[in-house]
Amino acid sequence: MRLILAAAVAVLFAAAAPAQAQSVTIRNPAAFVATLQAMGYEPGPLSKVDTTPEVDIKVDGFGTTLRLVGCTAGADCKYITLVASYSDVVAPPANWVQQMNDEFDLLRVGVDSKKQLYMFGAYVVEGLPRSELKRIFDFWAADTASIGNEAIEGGYTAKK
Image (cartoon, rainbow, N blue to C red; front, side):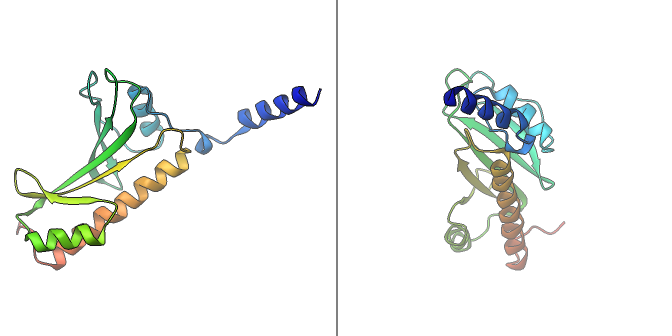
């Protein structure tokens, strides 16, 4: 009887859980994009759906490419990566890029083939509550802004 009562209580609590406590899943990329939409991240269309699905999103107004990685035929993905580049920060000095890597140790900061500054992060999000995914994006937004401000203060932005 206790098992039945405990199971009933567990079902009741699961059904009453707030939307923010729902777990994130990236096993189905299209469903994950719907989650991003529901959370307000303005995802664009899903591309590369058969291999490494990706979608452009807005994180605090800054364009970011989100890739679902470690997928099998475009599904059952293992983790996400976030990539953002700064089109106005071209060919920053290597020592400054290394300084950004030292300061932002959970990110990789580099220069792409166009010599534009970029930042990259990888995150395991499967099973996390949506609130934790939001926290990851909040940190991403703060780091994006901080690196941009460092580039401005260092005089590494292109004049427009």
